[in-house]
Length: 354
Image (cartoon, rainbow, N blue to C red):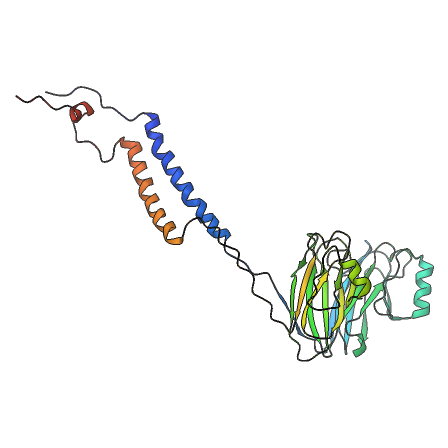
């Protein structure tokens, strides 16, 4: 006798149930995996000091534009050497390249052209070259040993070009004894890196830090005078009133602006540096200079993983099996499949005994 009854297929809710179970299993595995990934610690970058540069002649090209600007506006040289500057006027107006003789002076952009001319007439210049439109010129800057760590401003003396932004700075690296470091100030109100390390052979030691502004906010680089002293947003003003900083320089408020922070460290220790612009230190703009002291390893945060690694591996294997079973069950309605011709009512009914 042939059974003509139609075959029963699983309903939509029964088909969806295995996928729901699989999704729950997947979530229970994914959460501890993500937590374990977040628990991996990362060490902060550390700036390592290097010996002062050796003397050596170099050449740099500076474009003079009608914006008006010098491009680049920040140059680097080495004391006890000659810096050759190739000046290219790419605009349609005359420009000059005039370098102030006095180091570490920032000229006032509110001066009139006559006041600017008067300053150079009184104090002189290291170079003063006029370049016509579409032409180029050369000038040599002799940087003696005493210029190490100095900064010299250069401007265009053509009326109102300096006032409109045509100026720049030459930073001179020391070729004498000492150590060099570099740091960056950012619009995120951070020093990057905020950990510097120097290992001098003797004390006192001269340290030169070239600070570059990667953003457009103005900052300061201000170093505490005492080692192993912790500054805070609440006490740093009073502290600097009674303990003048080892160095405090203004970082130019322009992307790519640089300034030297040159100071002498008397003894080994950890020296804190901050930005004194209101609100910047409170927002986390601080760092530490380790001099002759090992930088401690980065603290390892406590693990936030929910389960151990071997549990994750085992759960992953079980999950794979569960997903396979769920896929097969969604298409067959039963796993393993029933034998042909068997129906639920057949399997549940036992004939009476004779």
